[in-house]
Image (cartoon, rainbow, N blue to C red; front, side, top):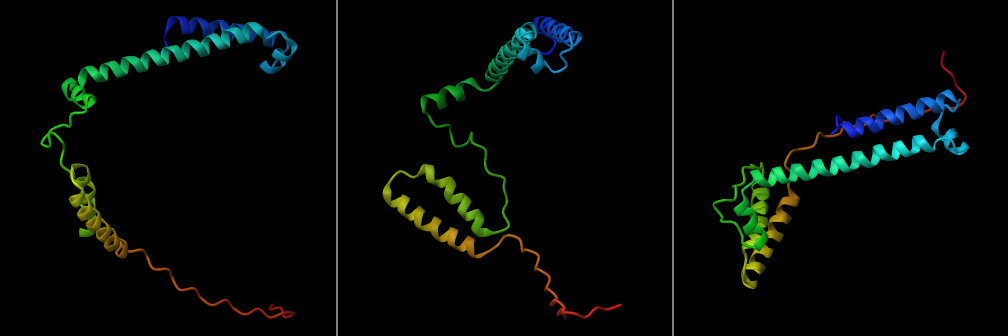
Length: 162
């Protein structure tokens, strides 16, 4: 993208326009714009910016197309049609938690999309509420206890120590 010949040409023209502005005594570009002399530089600056944005969009589109070529097309098509993938295709969770309650809550959340009727949903909701309550009572790793603060020495007014 940065080595595109058109982009390089625009950048060269922009740098030449900037050099000519500096020869005329306009050190900041803003001063040249206020004087109405920096139109040529502004034209090339906008050209560089527009071309760079177009090249970035093309590069992104190419990357997306390449990704879709390499990814499993059939699975994507099924998902776009609303067909759920097979359960054996989905990867199993490999996360191990220190607390049993946390594992239980994670499993309950993963079961939620598979529930069909209200009764099962109500049971799951109750178990989830109980599991979250138990989880809130415990902590996974203990915090460091704060060191006890020493009492401040009482200050006395008017006396100085040497």
